[in-house]
Each structure stands twice: as C-alpha cells, then as structure tokens.
Length: 364
Ligand code: MRU
Figure (tube, rainbow, N blue to C red):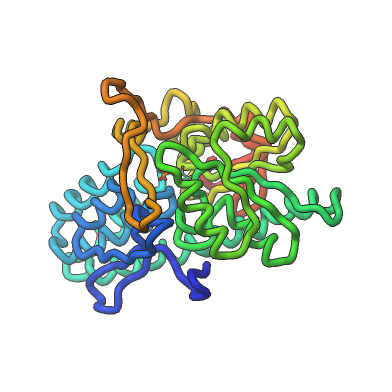
C-alpha cells in the first residue's frame, strides 16, 4: 500500500544483500521509521518487542530471521538453534511455526554450503506469497461488501474491524482490510469503525494510520462502543483477522474479538474473519482448550504512550500504582459465532466441513 504516495511494504531485503528492513511499528502513528535487522537475534527481538506484529508478518519476519541465522551459522545445530530462538518469541500466531517449519524442512536436506542462498530464496517466496494470498482474500471478500452496497444505494457500507489486520500486519494488503481496500479502490462507498484495541491500541495507532494514508473514510471508537453501534444499526458488517484458526473454524484473535462476535450475533450483524491458509492450524480442533494465549506485560495495561502537544512521545501511568493488571493478549471466538471465513480460495462456513471444502488436501 502507499505511504505518502509511495508503494511500501512492511518488510523487504535491504540493498546490501545481508540484512532486512522493516517498518518499526512501535513508532507509529507518530513517526515513520525503518529499522534494520542484521542478525537472527535482531529478527527475534523485532517479533518479541512487536516492531513487527500481526500473524502473517510475524511469519515473514521469522523466515528472514532464518536467513540471517544461516549467515551466522548454517550447520545443523545452527539450524535448530535459529528455529528455537525464533519460535519462542510469541506463542499464539501459528504463522510463526508455519514459516519456521517450512524453512527448516527445506534447509535441513541441503548441503550446508547451499543453505544461505536457499534460505534467502525461500524467505523471499514466503513474503511474495503473502502478498498474493492477501490480494486474493480481498478479491473474495469484496463481493460481501458489494452485496450490502446494493441494498443501500448511495449510502456507505459500515464495516467494523478490531485490532490491526491491515497491511501493517502482513507484507501488503492486510487480511481484514484487503476487501475494504479493494472496495474503496473500486469506488464503493465504505466507512470503517476502527476499534482502538486496548491495551496496545493497534486499531487507534495502526489501522487508523493506514486507512488515513489510503484515504479510506474511518472513525476510531473505544472498544466498548461496538455493541451500542450495532444496536443502532450503524454496523453492516464486521471483518476481523485471526492469529490462529482451528481446523473446525474456531477463531483466535486479538483480545476483545469474542465480545464483538457476541454483540454481532445478538444484533444479526454478519461477522466474518479474513485469513490466509497459513493461519489455519490443522492440528487443533478445540480453540478454547488448545490454543496458547499470550500473556503480555502488565505495563501495557497500566501505562499509555502517546504524543504530547509539544510533539514529544511520552508514557504515562493510568492506574493507581498499587493496582495489579492482567493482560491476556488474545481470545477465542467459537466457530458458531462466525458467519464465514474469507480465504484466498473463497468464502466458507466456519466449520470443519467448510474449511475442508476449500482445502481438501489439508483436511485429509
Ligand atoms: O498482538 P498483535 O498486534 O500481533 O495481534 C495482531 C492481531 O490480532 C491480528 O488481528 C491478527 O494477527 C491478524 S493479522 C492479519
């Protein structure tokens, strides 16, 4: 997508042929800064400290992290070490394990001397494929927006989204945002309700920043406003992303997604989840019991970071110093609350049968 009119991705190999560049998302929306990853440890840090985040981008960064690691130590022991150090960075998004498994499966059968070059080619391939998958999600999801637009001619289609499942969470296009960008580019009137998404505010800081850059009409709301807006008929459609979806259609996504799905069901608002197939965990069938939920630092809840009127960035405490805080980062929305899954192969029912109809080779 575009930043200041210039086509930009979230991650790309640097011109020196030995490092990787990323948008440092911890600086957005107030500063646009590019960071350089030179080592596997740099890549692991970027994922853990959330300079990059979002399931597909975590996968792409891990793939490049394996390449950076191969340049440091391409032995079998090195391969296992790079895999482990990258894998332990974040527990919930399955794209991390998917990308690492794919890299290791390829590299372990190659002679050591060929591993660096092939790691780079495979990381490039994973990155390019992500763009293609998300674009296809956009093509498949835009028809849902068309259908609603046809029923309310001249009026905007109001879409609510949670967290950032935009292009910043992927290599390009985003998952939940891909149909929105395609609809907007095709001239359909869309308006996006952007959940701020406490505690890290990926909606307020990242989704709003991207929509702003692309000129898509949007309004930031506090996380608690969605149910009220649905009762008022101000939401036509919810589209979220996911960090891991089970083979049975349970959807794990940013904390608060489940509450939106409950409100959507109570108000007959369609609740769709957009995902590329590397986000499906075919080994898991019960999302609530089997998906590990990341517990992040209490400081993300007790403190807020923002820009002061003089332009500086400051972090302030919002809770009493003596109060503890819990910070589960994801929740699971049971498949029964999900209207449908938008994938690169089409839209399906959120169920084992629905996913099997689109991905028979995986379901088998
Ligand atoms: O903690 P984050 O910012 O990595 O969480 C991101 C999300 O929950 C996204 O909705 C999800 O990864 C889908 S991204 C296309």
